Image (cartoon, rainbow, N blue to C red):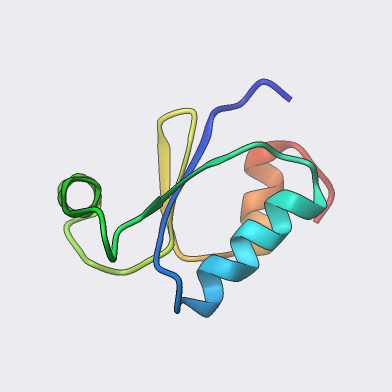
Length: 80
């Protein structure tokens, strides 16, 4: 898989954990930014989405807010 995957998350976010577990289950490498401690990445996320909600997942520049297993699988070209 040659897609670049980034997730903006917080340690207490249940849906963030579900997304990261999904990436691990599918062997999809990703970069995680913990916006609870990284103010610069939090601001970057807010500029992208206009909100503070997490997870924010970016796949090859395409941004999605929240965890939707089916949608994520489709975007990544893997089985849900």
